[in-house]
Image (cartoon, rainbow, N blue to C red; front, top):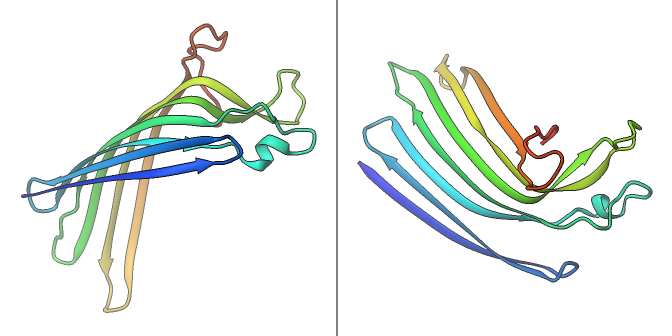
Length: 171
């Protein structure tokens, strides 16, 4: 049985926004039995608007605010070895709550010129299920296959916003 805890802290300064951010991250990994890994992680995130998002001629939005988020995930992975066959199965639950999430969206008038906008508060959460396997054919060659499926819910949860509760497309 092995337990591992990995904390980190990153300091980030964006001079254009005069924003100084401390961004902590922590990961806990536990192997209760051979071939089984259980982990959980947390991170605080900061994303400044790109130059294109701010200043793209005719489409940029110079009023964009940086997005900040708190994210977490929990993972279970099982990866046994059966006589040279290496299957791996995993399930991940993820959750992110963001303030001022930056999304490129089509304009309300239906034109094709998408523009970046801030979404006051958003939640993205869901599951990712994975299965993979490989088998060695000889010392230098292996046959591998992988499949994954993601279930995602991304919603605007901004209080007082007419889009509160609606799904965020292209998130």
